[in-house]
Image (cartoon, rainbow, N blue to C red):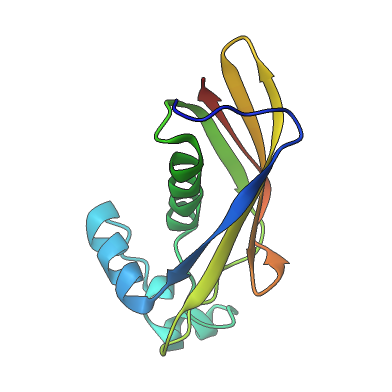
Length: 133
């Protein structure tokens, strides 16, 4: 890791724009072709407010933020609960903001407590990452 971290240190938030084209590309890469991620009518028919991003795509954005903050350090643990969908409009996109704080630095590991939001609403519960220092 090329960066030094201190417990309590705030990390500069990262903002990622998620578009419908991103969802199509992710579906191809992951094999998850559930129509709620691409078809407005299907998404609404099952009670969703519209097309939603894949939960694992949202978590991958967290991994991207962690990589940017840490200079690509080895990720030992990355996890969260999926608590609210990221609704992706047909035009433009949805902005996912990943913020974080260094919880601890011990035994060669840096633990990050994260906050992941879209339109000010938390979309992941208890997100955290642990990287090797």
